[in-house]
Image (cartoon, rainbow, N blue to C red):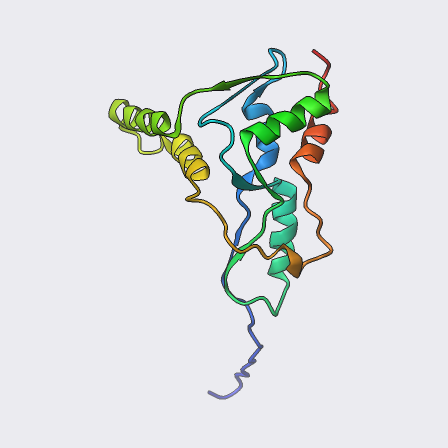
Length: 173
């Protein structure tokens, strides 16, 4: 074709799935009633799961987006492995108050709650948060090998630090 120029640019864009576990900053208020000083969760409080703040997840994703040497595939990062027991200890340390721990039931009870929700509600999205909680507590969302060390300039925030930051603006009960 006359008069048409072609331009071949090197394309290095790979599909990268950034996995960061649960967004821990949401837990500070979702599971804790700071006025009543209670924490409510499923399981026995010792089940561990990967978690990262939303800001740190964004930092890792932004860094990965401009990394021309990052191979395609899964890129897993996490600030830490948490449990509801450990989160409660951190919140107690930050607030200086003891929190009453309250389990809604075992992992099997959670499975029953999911089945009950599905039987009562035809909306397939109705049990989504319960299912995600089940996957967290049973290790189905475990990230495996983490790649935090690829970007040493990023130091992910701990749950303790996130709780301190988020609760600093809260009026004392």
